[in-house]
Image 1 (tube, rainbow, N blue to C red):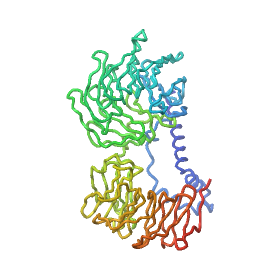
Image 2 (cartoon, one colour):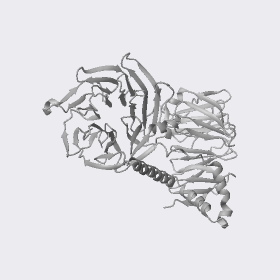
Image 3 (spheres, helix red, strand yellow):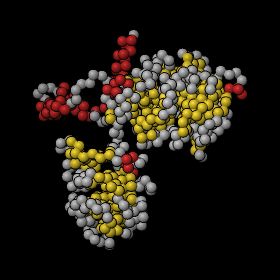
Image 4 (cartoon, rainbow, N blue to C red):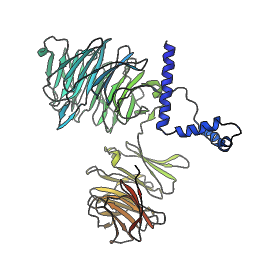
Length: 589
């Protein structure tokens, strides 16, 4: 029977692999090559295109030893997953979804056994309704306990209906947690208090207790594996136990967004503006990683052996090993994860996604091919195609020779750590590969322009510039840097010395983009004022192109006679001499 189950699991992995091929649009290529392979030996198709098969075999990667670290995918929920809990023996799984259902799964077969619906009143915070947090545990073989942020406590006997208790919380809750034995449920409140419900007490009025300590909202909580300790985070860390009551552990200063206590009870891991460890015996705080900018819901847990930490958000998951103490590594576990937990034996990770999927992942296989924690880097290619500049999501710039694939220069600077959001990052490389310009085009005071000079191997900030730079461009001769501003002006700087040469005025609103002509004699600027202006050498009287729709991303033709712009509806080709549109390509259905 177990052998048959393994065969079914392998077929499921094969189907998932095929589905990924379809999503990557490799199916057409695969079908085309299969047709060539199975075609008769004398067919024209086979003899004409057989070289494509031979070319493929030269670059085709070696056959893998397994299907990969994704063991199976459970589907059924219609919205993102709020909580995942395996049974003590790891054979069953309970998931809580934002679709207001609780589902029981058989892990071995990957099938749904039971489900129950939970009617939840969404919490109103800052004039906005949301259902954000739920916690669940599997304390006994046939009992599941669930607590929801709105104050709902649910005890589900799997052989019977779920018993629900609606608790009246003293304040709006920010976070909820349940002890592994199912006895305690805790709510972290907006006013800094913690409300703890003891399910073993008979009288309802005696079951709930309020504990004070935090001076501001409680954003995170976690119970210890023995259910005897609760740690909570605000701008400080407190712990609570049934015997000793509340006790302050340390003051952090900045907001703590996530917290976890190690299974051996020796340390607490937390994330504020950095990822840190509080050692319970020495009361010392050790920083694991700084400058981590959260995106979406954050996850944090310690492995059952207390040797490693898993953490991450919607962009992916990372692993830190206390023994090696090397920089955290990114695991190839996908993105948009909304809930996460480890199996009791620590061998698999269960990850819930925003679209309702739950995936089972093999930890050992994932660790065999981890990615170094580089993440999505910003890149810029030189105009001659010989150099590539990379900006890592942390504090490092590098310059690569594309032909030799060797990193020729590398620079680390903490100014690149200032929580720059990826969508506002801008990166340019000069045509001679001597200068790399990196910038944050977000609102001041986070609006920054830095210039990396390769000869001096130094990163300097551009001074005396517009307060709010919104667009950048480098001239083909590598001598001029143009900065478009929020007020519609364009400032021209000497790139090597960083001094202002002149200003161009005419636009009445924010500059969205700037582009040089191939010969560097002219440049075009786009603005929110629905105009494109083309500026000549030392000319303060530009050619103005107007449109009813806002035009984006101007681009010159190779001969400099035509200009291309786009909006959300179409791409337009302009004859610069005639100052008119000669062709329009409309967006398809």
